Image 1 (tube, helix red, strand yellow):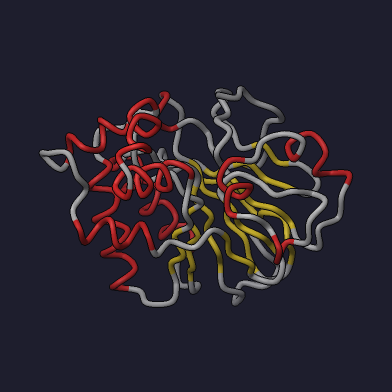
Image 2: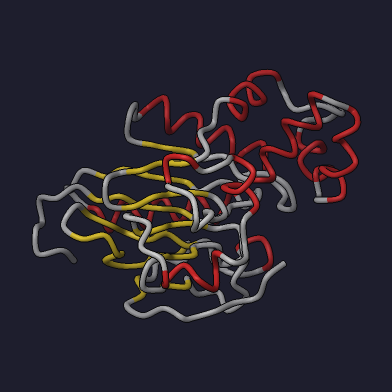
Length: 238
């Protein structure tokens, strides 16, 4: 834990992909870890598709935001963007369906996400900067200032960001998801952290705990409740 027990904690949560049960357990683990300390949350996107309960995940996040105003940031992932585009144009529907959009539509009993949930998706921001860390779904263009990143880059980036991020000081520690780590462990590097531990592929759903005394994480938690003091490097991409 931090040397300053009064500093608020920020929990960053990796890609959920409809894994409602894992999300519920992980939030409970985060609450237990925080104890009496104030807690904030940043979700790095990809709430829907592939898993069985995309609608339930959105319901839960919307309820948490309403119950704790100003303390929960939900970022937009590429799967949210594909769903938004598919609802705006039939021409975009095949790409979403090819990326497991049908698993989400089944939750709504038809061919369309509910208007309330769609409006929530359309309002999701692409990034969040807390002064120490830059939270984003996929990554950044290392040749562009953080406040000038393109939405498509923040939603889809993998290379060269994953390989060369440690060589470029962006002014913030980058926290992201998007590239699943089949090791089931977060990938902590000098200047970035990948939190997509492939929950929908059988891995855990993971969170990193941060505070305001340092940019890198203090601890890692999973939906199993375990705190991890060490993390792996590298992981599969898909």
